[in-house]
Image 1: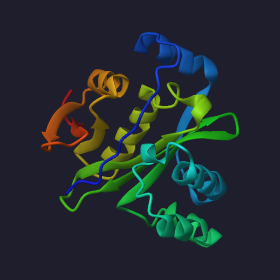
Image 2 (image 1 turned 45 degrees about the horizontal axis):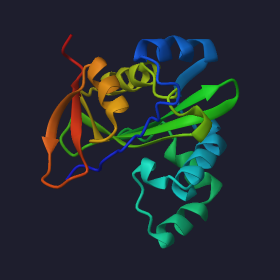
Image 3 (image 1 turned 90 degrees about the horizontal axis):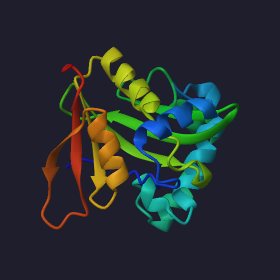
Length: 192
């Protein structure tokens, strides 16, 4: 069973995706693979994601015990999550200046070469701005560097903005479960 990511990008300005991309450039949003030095920003984003009013965006089980466990993790645990030794997972942080405004966690599935976006979140005032092609490009480049060939993500069926963006980036619908609130989209990174 895939671990779904349900990223909701709110269409705050109702502008075409191309307009948002240039807007992202103007805002100076940059995406980078998180390193152990980024642990505090990673921790803050993760805690905000799993405790906020819209925690379902992050694909996190809302079990209060699990949330408390996350909040009690040691600083070294957060640093280890971002270690270069983690060859089967990585985190991309989106930044504006020195502020982290978005996060995507990516893990390799048991089937070698297939990676999935396990969770994604953006700060409320950054919605509609954080997941530009720039972030996906960073993810694809890292997956390719790690020998991957495909990227999967789960999308809620009502999230038409994310579906359009993913489609424009080359993702295609691949899996649907009966009565599921969404479906999976796949990007074959070896296809042009």
